[in-house]
Amino acid sequence: MIYNIAIDGPAGAGKSTIAKRVAKEFSFIYVDTGAMYRAMAYYLLQQNVDGNDSQEIASKCEGADISIEYRNGEQIVLLNGENVNAYLRTEEVGNMASVSSANLSVRARLLDLQRSLAASQSVVMDGRDIGTTILPNAEVKIYLTASSATRARRRYKELIEKGEECNIEDIQKDIEERDQRDMNREISPLRQAEDAVLVDSSEMTIDEVVSAIENIFHEKTGK
View 1 (cartoon, rainbow, N blue to C red):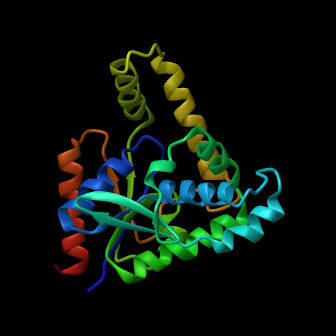
View 2 (cartoon, rainbow, N blue to C red; view 1 turned 180 degrees about the vertical axis):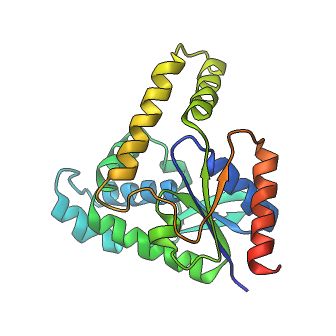
């Protein structure tokens, strides 16, 4: 039996951390949608596509077949059958991904690829429109959130631990502004799917959130 778990929520809610943990607990595939967009960007660069040419990006992106596998516990991003992990974190790829990810044809192509992954194996996928757009038929949908103050404190702690100077009030303001942008964007805005279960992690540890989602999964699926 194949199961899909969709985790949506605002920036800073800990979606990726939680999704990876849940995937590990169930031995599901964690689908790193960001890595898939970077793989597409790498492909476009290999095809010498001009990042300013939206029509060329749209025509070339169909040639990319992108998938994710796990080998010996490591996530492997495959582009037309080749492991491209080593190329995904360069500045050049990041810059192209920033441009190409806004292209409607690229988003449509990756939507098809992400749905294909979810149809062939059990996955956990996180983002802002997974349960509403990408996997509307997912067996389990979670809307993971936390107060803007909590998310700001978490981000502040991360930055301080890295030795960076920051202001917690500015961080909270940025988070709230991003929430507004995500909720009001024209394409696939951030919102809680009607059948998603709300999990507010403001007063919860990572282990408690993972446990809560596991319980929701068992309740929803009977497994």
